[in-house]
Length: 91
Image 1 (cartoon, helix red, strand yellow):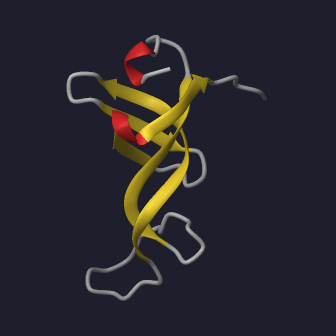
Image 2 (cartoon, helix red, strand yellow; image 1 turned 30 degrees about the vertical axis):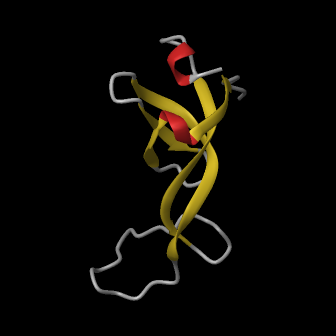
Image 3 (cartoon, helix red, strand yellow; image 1 turned 180 degrees about the vertical axis):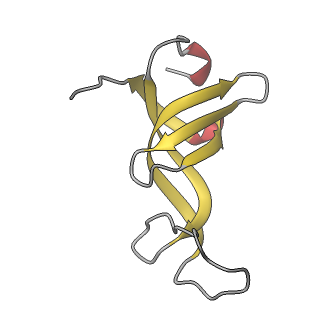
């Protein structure tokens, strides 16, 4: 399935990759509260995870995702997502 095939009004998720600051273990670095110029235990790298699709911009080919691990909103291009599938919400 491609991002353009997603049905509006339904919950969808996908695997994604983005370039970001990552920790040595590959987790997304949380920069909350970090002052500019402060040394951090993270380096630029590729972060991969699963995200729930919040918004789709077909014109610019972008998806806004809510990362299921960090719970942060991340914007990625259509080319950086795969394994798109419906979300089954379970309580």
